[in-house]
Image (tube, rainbow, N blue to C red; front, side):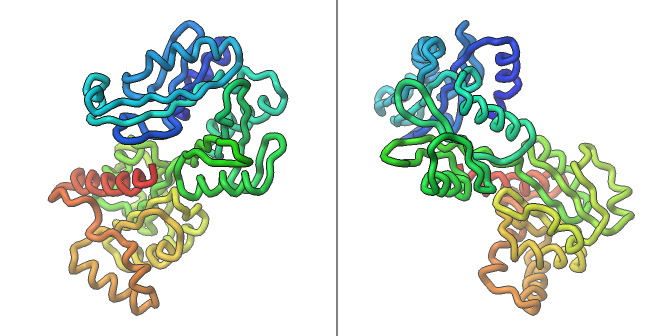
Length: 344
């Protein structure tokens, strides 16, 4: 839904009613992952995709009467192996799609409150979990925030726990509550990339990270590097401090990725000693195998276990025989995205 926000805002502001269709479950081959959305206006305008073109026509047909009724409907599309190629799939599978009139057009006060808070979270890079009841007819919703706050009528601790479980698993999914099914759509904050060291690779890595919508933070206490490095794309933050002085100011959680690139053990080890004790999703370290062996020896002497040290991706990046700074940055970004997408 996030990528559709500009059009969503435009259609709401121009009072153009629309429905939203969301992939809630897939089996076998599916061109679009769970959580993918498409919006359909009453004038049959369409933005987004739920199947890459395979079932969009049927979804539009189902959506039009729902816009008028203010209702919702579950759609299931099964494709046999023989039919798969004709609709763009590589093999047979099934796609379940939930279609409903968009919540912004619901006049019920509780639904209006939920939409207002959801809109605020999506606009301001705040995490939340949006729950839609998967029943037929008039739809209903809940909104859960990671601080255990929940909006919506007649909820209990079980629903809150299930929603927060989806968030911790980093996966939009169907959950059950009181023998009813709900789709929990996880909206994390923007992924955060911490780069330790304004090295030659850093400028290209920051450029790639911004392309893939990461928030970028570069940390380097060496003024000559932090001040003189010429960035083609400016990092969101450039900090001239030792990692130990500032890392704990950031959320070192499952939506954070970190790479140490300074080539200076005083700086890299300073960062790793904090990162290895945190819940960050990825830790990469630049250097040859020989350099990494020396790094591991130092960290072992500092009291880190084998399990903790195995979290370090080193030599960093996917193995593409990278030589130039651009290629090294590409291999690092590829590995980060691989780790990130393991949870989709």
